Image (cartoon, rainbow, N blue to C red):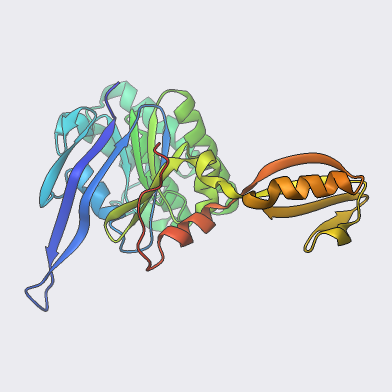
Length: 307
């Protein structure tokens, strides 16, 4: 199947106001998002994430390169009607919540009784059914965020592009959004998720890409990226923790982290000491570890593993 969202060699340059020099926000950026996945799009502030999203939505054009969304070139109105979009900084017209959602639904070609029904449904989905008559100007920041998510859902999109969707949300609302995204994926929809909340991304995303200084510096399946091939956790019993520096013992069970290069020697030492090896597993890294590693000022390159 063709990619739902594809960037092909996208470069975007801006001219600096104070000089004639140009700033490159995206640098030969290429990426494919497949049908039915939750794709995490990460990077520090200024990495080029919002620029990439705005180009995909047709809000601006690239300096060079091209791309497609829902099989159509970026900017095609017919393709955008199949997309739900939530901007990083939600700015909504000052209208009652339900009227506002209906307004955005109408922009996507919905009408009549279906539009009214769908507007009520999405307000219920995001927990704003009791705020339907309240003006958006009188809602809290978290409620405005949920209202923005409702307008992104109203046209029942095949692709959701969400830029910081859990910003300003409390923990309960974040759980709601997480469950909503997983349900959407189970229904065959595709989600392109940009977020600084790495713990949330780690929980829901099938694949992850990290952008830094306009370049793609890491991409892969979440589980594979989080597995460290450099260290293993060895769990043993029947030995003293004092045998191994840094080992932790509790209730007769000893745990220690060892480099992959010395794993065999450690296992043999456990057996030679009369102990039993309970398990050996790769040490799981956090997404924060990976993020910090590839967005440092040192040169970064694509990993050997491809998605």
